Amino acid sequence: MEAAARAGETAQTLDRGLRLLHLVADAPGGLTVTEAANRLGIGRAAVYRLVGALTGHGMLRRDGAGRLRLGAGVLHLARRAQPLLAEGALPALRRLAEQTGATAHLTVVEGGEGVALAVVEPSWTSFHVAYRSGSRHPLERGAAGRAILAGRTGAAGPVSTSGELQSGAYGVAAPVLGVPGLEASVGVVSLAPLDVTVVGAQVTVAAQAIAAALT
Image (cartoon, rainbow, N blue to C red; front, side, top):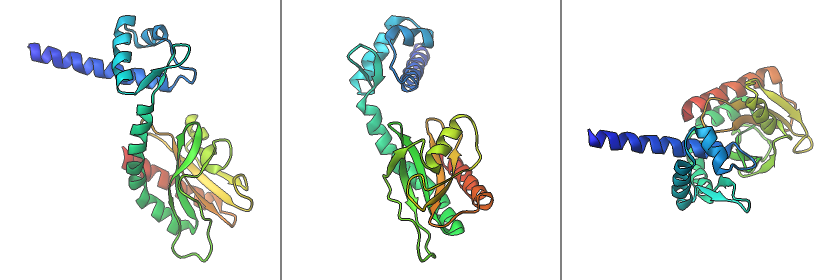
């Protein structure tokens, strides 16, 4: 009985710690201990204990005003997870690139920007867009970022743009939805105009396949 009770307490503490991390992650301006306690529905003393443990592991930090913010340890975990995300997305990206004859990519949110995490070029075209993995851009520019923003509102349909990131380049992308903790999109970029109806459907199928592979 005592062992079961201790196991239950440990699980509850872990759950609260994870919930606290999510709350801080969703608060651009950080959180005070009081705000965190109110949102978690627990006492300040319990929050202080959680903060102490998470700070010790680098998952949380306090800024100059004493507000709770994510620590560098979260970035370390995120970087370790990125190769796994890319690996899970590659089969769908390869199919998409071959279907469309355009460069396919998985873009994720990092630091408020869109980052190309995985890129696959078509094998049969004479010319295609060279899109470097690791490329960054504002979410408000380009199909990949705009699709992520649309996904935040629950919109799953494709988004198309022309020349927003590179003159003469055309893009179509769709958000990856339903993967907890991940904001991402799947898209293609081409040197020629794309049929949004056809390519949009293909991009949406790829986004759904990647979501299924990652959940």
